[in-house]
Length: 192
Length: 192
DNA sequence: GACACTATACCGGCCGGACGGTCTGTCAAC
DNA sequence: GTTGACAGACCGTCCGGCCGGTATAGTGTC
Image (cartoon, rainbow over all chains, first blue to last red; front, side, top):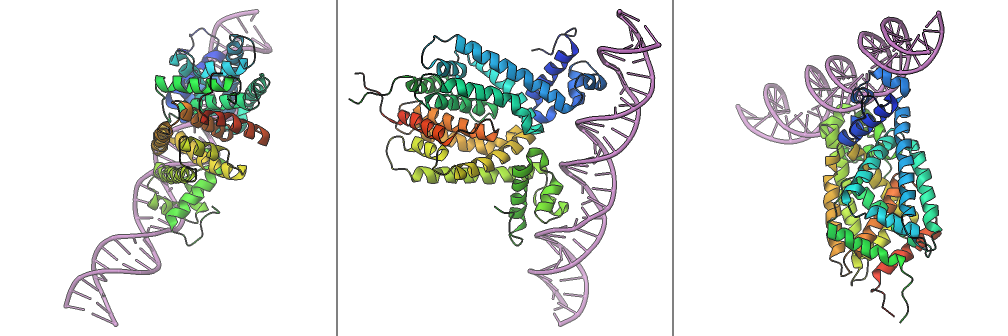
């Protein structure tokens, strides 16, 4: 998303610019002026498309929520059918082969997330809806109750660690975590 | 922590007031004036103790980090010794019997966390140090590699869900997640 | 014990800058 | 000539931080 092509429609360019700012300079760096400049538009122009900062953030978050939803559904579809499909998709999501892709997704969502939350926690509504759907999907997954949610929580934890830069697991650690969580996909241990 | 007794020392009272504000009105509600008023001190008085807003946030976060560290160590100490002790402590931390206690801890940490991060992500240093220590402890826990980290990540995920109000698991769901994660504490499934 | 001096802890007015949002103006296209 | 899509000057507010003051307690010292 190298700030939208000059001839892309302004609305998209503004959203792109705002997103880039939030990712680069953090929540507090997002001002209307900065977003307008980044989009090659005047402040008046920005306010023509987004009547307030809140509207801008709503737009930003809506886009991200939709994109997360689609990305998630695609990941689920890419998994072989059967019990644990959704849970496996979540693990694939969190432990995809290339960390870059994971990070790209993470960082994009994270920045917008924080910006919206800071302005007004209620703005996270669309995200909450997506999460609720994911939770429903993973609960009706054919796995013993709790297993899917535990896997999802672990994925969320990894996301949060990156969100706040708390730690960066090594590739070995990632694989080990992946293997550990994979145990939750297997049938219950037999009682030998 | 009902805003510090009037005769507590000012520094503590200011920190208490700031923390209360952040929890009640969110990150953006924390201004020097508000914190000063809440502590029954003038703005000048606040700035005497904390030379800048950043200093105030540093103080806030340092206190929380120390408290988390101690709380965590106490939880570990309360677990019977043996392999998986730290991991069990983390589960106890996330699934303690009374949700209220968990929430109290969560919310206090969360609010300060977000406030500091918003001002400057670098301020999370002390928290990162605590997390790093926790990760080391859980890695050297006698569990297969990855298992402890997976449990920790799940705990983090639950924390984040509450932090952003993404979802509130029912008590049943909590117990089911707990049971699922407990499987990671058992020895590997035998190959019958 | 009286006086000068200093340090500590705090007060509160003020300033400067930033930022969200308004408003009027412009200009091409239809 | 009317509308859509901007431009950009401008305003009011808010907030962080500075600064000049002040009351109290302590310290030396004659």
